[in-house]
Structures are given as C-alpha cells and as structure tokens.
Image 1 (cartoon, rainbow, N blue to C red):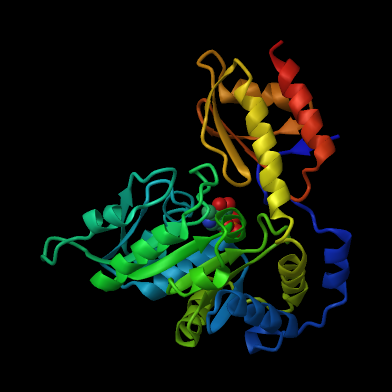
Image 2: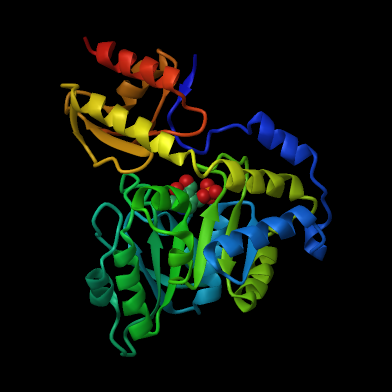
Length: 340
Ligand SMILES: Cc1ncc(COP(=O)(O)O)c(C=O)c1O
C-alpha cells in the first residue's frame, strides 16, 4: 500500500469520473463551442450566485487573472503573508499586473477587518494606491483554517467603505463551506471574483473556475488568452469538474473526520512538538528539535507513506478522496512505531 498525504491534488479520477469524461460532448472552447465547458461555467456560477464563469487550467491562473482584472499597475493588494497568491504563484502580481503586495501577519493565514484597515495606504503621492484585498478560504499554510462568514462579511464591509475590490482564493472553498456551515451563495455575493479549484479536495484531474460578473469574465477571457490559457476540446476536463461538483462535495466531511483522527493520534506522539489546529483536511505539525523534516520524510517514505515538508521542522499531511480508512489505520500504526 502506498499512502500519499502530500496534497489533495494527488487524487486520480474515479471510474465514475472517467466515464463522465469519456462520454461528454466537446467543442472548441476558444470559439465558445464546448458544451461541457459552458455547462461547467454556468453550473459553478449558479452555485455561487455569480453571473458568469471561466474555466482555466489552474488555480494559479484564475487567481492571477482576477488580480489582473481588478487592479491597475502601481496599485497594491492586501493579503496574508502566507497567501498562495503572494507566496506560491511565482511573483504573479508583480509579473502579470505590475502591482505591489502589502502582506499581513494574519492569524492562521486569515486576515481580520482591522488588519485590512491598518494596511490601506493613505492618499499620498509616495504610496501605491490600495485597491484589492485577497483572502484564502480555507488557508493552505494556515493548516486548512477557515473564515467564519461574519469575518468575510466584516472584511467585505471594509472593502466597500474604502472602494477596494475583494477576491476570494477559494481553492478549497467547499472544505470551508463544509466546516463553516455557511452557504456558497452567502459567500459568492460578498466578492468581486471567486476562484474555485476542482482539482484539490473535489478530485478532478485539472482545472479551476473564476466566477464574477459577465463584464469581468469578458475581460478575464482576454487575460487568459494572453497567458496562453485558451483551451480547445477541454470539455473532457470540464466533464470531470461537473462530476466533481455533483459527487464529491458531500464527502469532504469524511476527509475532515480522518484529519481529526490523525490529529488526535499525532498529539500523543512524543517526537511531535506542536500542531496547528486541525479544522478541515490539512494537518501541519512541528517535529521535535532533534528531528528534521527531511529525515522524517525519508523514514516515512521507507514505509510507503509520503508527506510534504513546509519548513525545516514542519510537515504537512492532507487527507483526500484517495485516502481511505485502511490507509489511515496503516498511517497511525506506522507513526506509532516509527521512533519506538
Ligand atoms: C490556496 C491555494 N490557492 C491556489 C492554488 C493554486 O492552484 P494550482 O496548483 O491549480 O495552480 C493552490 C494550490 O495548491 C492553493 O493551495
């Protein structure tokens, strides 16, 4: 048995998903003629109450397109210092949009309304103009932490009061909805743009959708084109996305339950120094000073378990569609004897 806990992006399409992919009709999406892509975009937009959507190859692309259409060069975006849009998208805001980023040391990857207020530049020729706030829900580097709806609404109010645009990196938004107990429609109406990944917890092989107004999505099509993201018969991938939205949302709570069980067991191990609170499908823990993440991962992989290093002593496990109860039992048993 191989257990892969590195990320929820490692899942392979299920039989049902493959059947949906191979039986779909496709067309040339650059001509707007792929029925599966059109259906996916309409479906995702309806779920979040947005007017339109655009299917893209990755969450990096949907995020960076959103940043591009919501800002102008010489403006500034506010986000958490750990945010994917800032830290893991290869300098996209500077490269694609010629904006600067004001990072905030938030709490578990999340901003508060006050953080946003404190980060808005005054109107003065020395400063860039603050024009965008981006939040990540759930927060990857925050250990899968999720915003309460009231926190998202609080930041939304600040954005409205200061004329700022508001973007959601919802790579794992359905995990946040499952754990937070609020609705996609309640979230969608707060934001100018919502990026949703189909290839993380939802288990599709490729793809993200960006949701917004018709006008913004028209602009987004041009930006996707200049990034080389216009795809042709990509409806095979969109069919996987539709299948994921229909079949893989309800089950996310199973991933969360397994993550909680792993957390309970990890807490008992003397060689683990600390864990971030586990609230969805991500578990981040710090090893005892005497063990580096590198040597831990080698030891673990000798037992056929893969995990990810996030810092010198920090390790991440992510539960997902291809991580089942047998794998969980095996992982717990292996961890219990790894340093015995
Ligand atoms: C929070 C978050 N946003 C965006 C992305 C980017 O997604 P992709 O890998 O599809 O570019 C990731 C990827 O892990 C992520 O965790």
